[in-house]
Amino acid sequence: MVAAVLEVVPDNANARNMKTHIFAPPGTNLSPRLERNRRGRDLVVGDVHGHFGTLRRALAELEVGEHDRVFSLGDLVDRGPDSWAAKDWIGGTDPSARFDLVLRGNHEQMMLTALVEGPRRRLQRWTNDAWSLWMMNGGDWWRATSREQSAHAWIEALGALPFCARVETGHGPVGLVHAAPVHGRWHDLEEWVNGDEDLSHLTRTRALWSRVRHGLVQREIGETGNEHLGPVEGVRCVVTGHTPVREPTWHENVLGIDTGVHITERGYGRLTIARIEGKEIETLSFNR
Image (cartoon, rainbow, N blue to C red; front, side, top):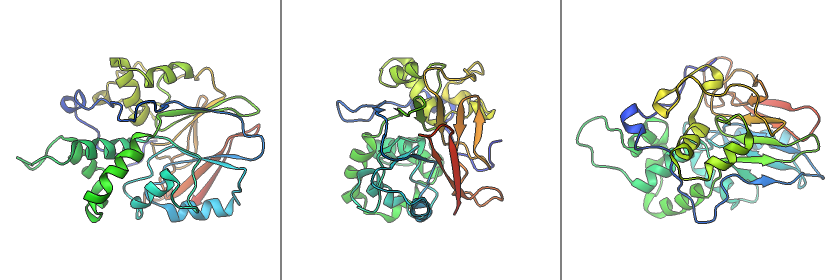
């Protein structure tokens, strides 16, 4: 089930100009592969949306140590109380804020595109430019920051975020992507997110925005209703965020763990972390 609180996505006319292009420094690995962690746990964090206090409490309760790895599925910013803190977690500038890998979510992409393009002069009340799209989806916290001093640093940090990652475990590889694995084979997702063809733009957009495995086809991002919904080959499972669910939910071998930490509606308001290195995939949820 899709929660009542959803993002505003680009309309059909604007989507043609808003395919998720690559904003990344040359040589950035957009689909890294991580070796097996033989000394600790591998923990995957669902959408945080500025609730870093909840995240800190969760990691403390799990007693995360130096040999454990912590991965983020993206959507660290927007809609929560401390979005500005995301850059510290992305860049590792705060010793107490640690991620071993942060993926690009649709909110990081919206913010990045908006900062790169800048605000446009409004000739009418509603516009479809990237800045307005970000503001409509929780980016209004930016108005309280020092834009001139921080925009470049944010662009640099967000532009280096990959779209997906594969993590080796003792029981087979696990794929990580913000919204959807898109293709029926993990290798195809890795290949297409790094390309510059039309299918690559479509793959990146859907990897950040798609909700097809939760029953919602979004034609404005190029979906047709014929998307792959079966198991994803080449990985043991795929862990995703993006679509709020009341409980971690499996669709074939794809696990959704965004339990809507930013949502006040009953049944949501929790941050979920998946432990992926063991024989079984475990999920733990923490109240906001």
